[in-house]
Length: 172
Image (tube, rainbow, N blue to C red):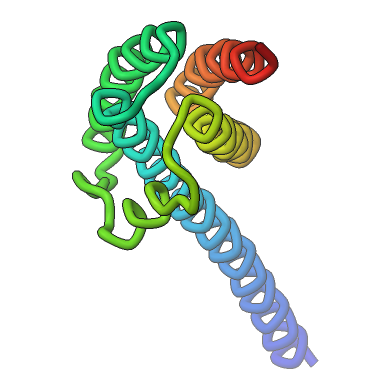
């Protein structure tokens, strides 16, 4: 009987240890999933940022209103700084960011059926800014990392201001 109790207690403790390790494994899987999401969303934000930079370069080639050209120049400066922040964050978190847009991405940004004028430019910019804000919202909600949360909040504020200015120019 004593041997049976000892075997039973051994089985119970083994089961407990295995269950404990199972929970630990689930926690590690969840942490890995969060890190993968952080990386994916940082890459997505960076790609959209590159698209905004590329789009803002088109002001030289197009007949934009003066106010739109001024905004475009401001965007270039702000999004170049953002690009640097994203690169620094990626390097710190060991995330690899693409340094150029895919050819297909550039083509889809530039592909227009009508000439690129101020209105077409602003509509494309509006959509890019909304997408970038959405990516940062998802990053902020998904992460537990304070650096990602800070970057998301600061950047989102800047993008929302740009979005408001884009809306204002579109309604003129």
